[in-house]
Image (tube, rainbow, N blue to C red; front, side):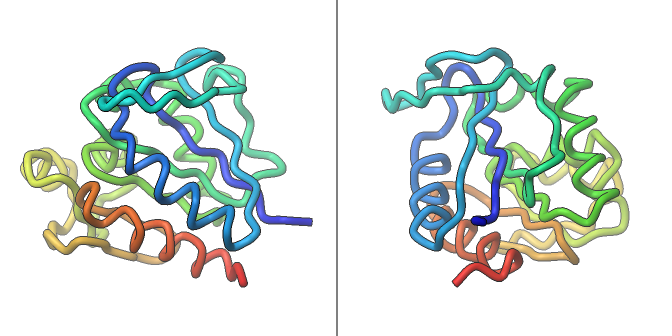
Length: 171
């Protein structure tokens, strides 16, 4: 049975390559990716990529999933203080699942209290926010601290996907 990943994207203006590149990496390495957003339906990236979210995060449950991946892009700010996104992230962390966020999405983890004392990176504009929530800012393209992976943006999308795949032990 393949590893299952719940990938959360914004309904509008998610960063296209932060969704497509890690998804391709993970699927190539045998994972099954399920997409969720604020609502089920078609979501649109900043540059026009369309993705079908089959779940609304309000209804999502991590049982049966091995990882939670939060995609960045300007639209991801809708999740910074979203109770459902926080619930999923905390569930992933408390059950030892891989928890990953790229670009501005690490702010969702920070606001959920999950980066306190942990090494993390994000899009540079989020550095102060992460530090204010207790993260140890590294500014690296990709940072791994235990089962938490953070990345700084679209240029790190492939390495981000590979880090998640490696933590999951995917072939």
